[in-house]
Each structure stands twice: as structure tokens, then as C-alpha cells.
Length: 540
Image (cartoon, rainbow, N blue to C red):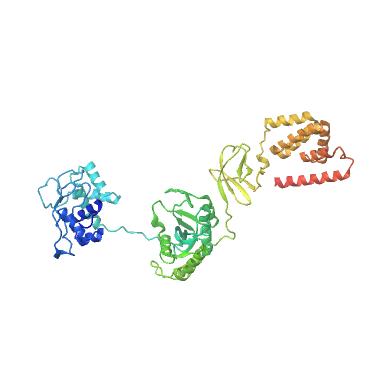
């Protein structure tokens, strides 16, 4: 032999030769020349077709494939290859016979499965395969036939079975829309400079089949809600029902009877007066109209195209939508989509005057001070929530704290800067902490006016005033108790119970006194008015 094949290629050629393949066919399948293949086949003792038989395949042979759970041994003698016995599987029950108890009859009048026809049909209706049906018949009904018997009977039943009828979902104008995601075209990413696959959002009205198709880079719960809002705005109205599948952006917990919607998505739909209807799990036919709309866009306008920007891709898709998709005659309705949408548009719900105000949401644990933290600021709750989880919604203006079970509004606060507190007056603890009582008692022993001022600070500022009281007590070590007593008396006389006022008074006291200098009185009065204004703003 002029060419030496690898052992794997050699065994492949010999195996095909045993199957009766011609040398030309072996060459086409393996790439080995006919001369080389013929030499290997002759060396293996396998007959080669005579020259006059080139181009004609060997006659068909009886079935010789390996079939699981076969109960018979079949001998093949077709073609030029030697006869080979078929493999025997271990699931052997009885000698091959279509009719139980009559193995000698070569032409049985009926299949052994005929008596179990109803059971087999019930198994097929439940989606069970031939192997499972055969095992059930043997285990539960004493079936004595082989798996091959059941296999042929199942094939016979499946060949004559009629396709299951599919119901047509008809909707009135303005009632329903279906939404879904699909794969969009390849668009160049402005950040990486490479082409990336986009996502295609499609909303299709159930009556007119009018669709809104939007392209995005990535999805999230907020993006999903914004796409619905943009689609409603493009349509100029809202349907009453939106049918969707159970993707995480819209449905947090899928359930047959009571699915849990994403809070942001639910609130956006409520703002537009729309009700979400998630499909049952593994029931895609419920939103077949939008799935057809997704496939229409993928196969027709976007197939094989690439775009340099997302705006270019969206503009191309909008032009195609207006020029071709809206003017086509729909295959089911036999009417133009644009004409049917003109009939449906007056039935859509009117859009609200203002767009939805989007927010962020999450869960927070109430700290020991009775507050939750949102972006490094702290917001108070009513008493009794320390250590418990609550739901929080926030945007650039407000923070809303909700009951975790009923979504009832517990507190609503204006946004604070980082490190700031926002606590309503009724949320302060009614009982004074023991450590605070000790601090006020210590201030009273330092001086009568010091104690009066400390109590006034605590009553106006609550827990936030504890550190200011400590600051006032620290001034006694620097300026003395008598000077501090005088400063506290001046603060109470003017009506400015503030640590800052006491400190500034003590810093100027060696040169000036409150009753001797009118300019200082005016300055302190202005400072008092400033503090009162700030306190009023915080309480509001």
C-alpha cells in the first residue's frame, strides 16, 4: 500500500466497508482515496464491488441498529458484508411474539398491545415515552410482551394521531398588549469600540398588531419599566392589560395563581392605569402575537446588519416600522396594520399628565437610634421598629419608609445631606434615657443656670443636643464655673439656648459685658433669629 492510514482511519474504512458502502462513497465520507480504501478492505477480507457496479449502492439491508430493550436476535445477510448478529439488550421479558401465548404463529393477527391501547394512549397524552409506557405495563399490568412490541405500537399510534387544536386569542380594541424581549442587532459599543449584541424590546397590541420596537444595551428593573412608559407614549395611549412572561425585571416570584410583581414595574403600570398579567410558567403561546413580532423584526429588517451606534440602529428600525410593518397586510386579520390601529387608538386609555417619578427601592434594618440609613443619611421611624426590616423608596427629593408586609406608608421625609438626620418630633422617645438623666443632673450641680440651659437644649434638640451639653460642661474647666454661669444666664435671657452662643460669649467676656456694649447685643440677637429660623426649617 502506497499510503499508510492511522489506526482510527483504518477502522473507520473497514467499518464502512462492512456496511456495504461503495469505494466512491467511502472516499466522499472519509477523504481516503478509493485505491487505498480498496486495498485495506481486501486485506481485511471484505469484498469489494466489481468494476461494473460503481455508482450503485448496495441493496437495502434489514434493520441492524442497536435498539435498547430488544428481546430478539436478528441476523443480517444483506449486501456484500458478512452476516452479523444484532445486539441483545438486557430488558428481555419473553420470546419475540406479537401475540401472547402463541410464539409459534409467524403471522399474528393482532398486536399484544391491543388489549392495553387505552393505557398506552393515556401515557402518550401525559408525554411519557415508549420505554416508560412499557415499564409501566410490565410492572403494573403483567404485560409479557417485549419493548419492541410496545415501540412499534407507539409509533403506529403517533403516526395516526391528529395534531392538537390551538385556540385563537381574540381581544377587543384597546384591551390588551403583549411584551417580550428578543436579540437585537450588532452595534458598536462606544466604550469598548467593539460590536456588541443589543436587546430588542417589543410591545404589540392584541387587536391591531401594531408594535413598538425599542433597542437597548442592557436591561434592569428600571429600564424595563421605562421601556413600557416610552412605548405608551409612542402609541399615544395605554392598553388595559399587559401580558408578559416571568422575567426577573417584571416578576420577582413566579407563581401560577399569585405572582409577585417587581415593585417599580407595578407602580409604573398603576400610574398609567394598566394591569400586568404574567403568563403561566411554560405557556409561551399566551403571548404568541408579540413573539411573532419579535421574530418578524429579527428575520426581516435586522437580519445580517451591523450599526455604528444605537441611535442609528433605532432610527433604521423606526423607518422600517413606519414604511413596511405598519403598511403590511397582516396574515391573520387580512387587513392593514395601520388601518386597524387607527380604529384601536380611540379605545386606548388616556396618558396621565405627568410622567412617572422613578425611585430606587430596597430593604433596610432599623438601627438602635430608631433610624434607617439611605445614602449616608438617617431617617426616623415610629417607636417599636428597632432591629426590624422595612422597605424604603427614595428619589432626589423624598424618602418613603413602608411597612414590610402591607406596604403601608410609615414615614415620609425630605432628603438630607450626608450625615444628616430627619426625625419627626413624635418619634422621639417619650422616656428619658438613664444616661441622659445623669448628664442633666451633673449639669445642674455645675450651676443653676447651667442646668436650666442644658434642659432647654435637650428639650429643643433631643438626642442630638447631648454632645452640645457635654461641650458646655467642658467650658467650665477653661473659663471657670462663675463665668459659665454668667454666660448661661445671658443665653437664657436673650432666648438663645445654644452651645455656640455660650462659647462666643465667654471668648469676648474679658473685654466686654452683655449689658455694656450695644453692638454685641445686636449681634447676639441676630444670631438668635438665625438659630430660630434654622430650627423652624428643620421642624417643617
